[in-house]
Image (cartoon, rainbow, N blue to C red):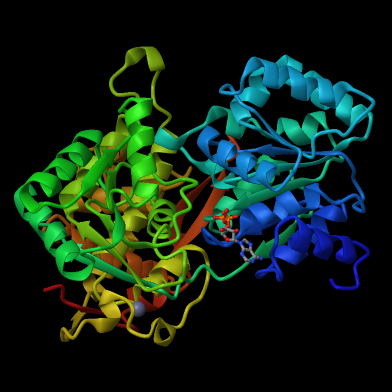
Length: 553
Ligand code: ADP
Ligand code: ZN
């Protein structure tokens, strides 16, 4: 890439405008590809330096496409931070969000329309704004006609595939970019997406043979741990406070809770009963309080923020020493993102999740009732609910796994193979001294395969792993309604959840069950299960199905 025609200009801008001397992994490759007019998909863990990948080429004049770079980003606060940082570097950057002042909007529109003077190098907007504002679309049209539209950038592109509380209808509509303004290069960036999610994003943006740049998602300085969550609230707060006081008494950290009420209560208890300076943060508190709490935490005036998942996207605090999950995340992407906010400076940091099956049930209820019993919002989409439940089950499987290296499990989710010896005992399972337990589950495995065959006979449009689990356990939910008549319904009733998960996950790992993907009409994919290639050997009794794990203390 040093031989590329853009290299000289790129290096000059890196040094003079950004005051940096070298590129991190894939940054130069990404910049060169977009300057070459190609679509680019850039995947890097949080803190990896994604913004430079589009901010720098926006300032280049040697690229194949010229003019303004349009950045579509989900959060106004994130946009404002980036724009003010760019302006302090002397870059002609603007935000066109609903929060922008009217005169500001007029000014940037004037600059873009004017044939004299410098056009803005970077214009940030939210997908909602782009969708709603015809005026903005007119301006983009004009730039397009004048060939002054350098590229579209979709930041935090994983939002495209998000559903539930994170769902953003306008993100799903971003296919208009390619449709309305063909030939304008698109760059999509994200800090978390597995292979399926990447395919969803590429398809939904109609990206053309994108250059895909991905790097290892391993975060070597993070220590991962899952602890049993005490059933009493008081005991949980005590466990959390005890951990902070003994390991991180002077450190900055984040505690994630499931609900707004829980985050308030937890912060209050930590303050009043343990003398820890903790504040709460969630989408339900007023803007001023939210901003104050975040600012105080960013500035180090308060050390601990107790939050719902509303907190953290775009938060760039390098010295977060611990991230505690008081409850499990709703999917592995979320868990990775949330824990990823620890240790951005590369120093050792702790990620602890407190797990109980009860929380999984609570989350499942939330997923099954996305509209909060509000009939005006229509019936929930069952396919999407299934999709969401499968994602939750992956987190449950992660939490209830007591033997495999956390890194192996976490990175497997991103389709990355990781050797457990490279963890260097930086996770609870690698450190666990507990004796290895082995059990022969051949009979159970045969039962699951026969059950799956029965279920597929009832519904050949796709059976999910979650449905197999719930049918086997004999649950009463809507998702298993159609399978109640099969002969093996509830055959696994006597097994506990951890055992059921362990068996099902090992069946997938051993290829007795295989996963396949189907893309729905909405453009998103769903995973289904079928009988795998290895099943026959076990059904014939040629092979025994033995599962090993370490017992949680
Ligand atoms: P992301 O969006 O991937 O989470 P950012 O773009 O916010 O990450 O960058 C994270 C930090 O890394 C920022 O402080 C940024 O200045 C720094 N950074 C990015 N690229 C480089 C580089 N090539 N050299 C040194 N620091 C960098
Ligand atoms: Zn490990």
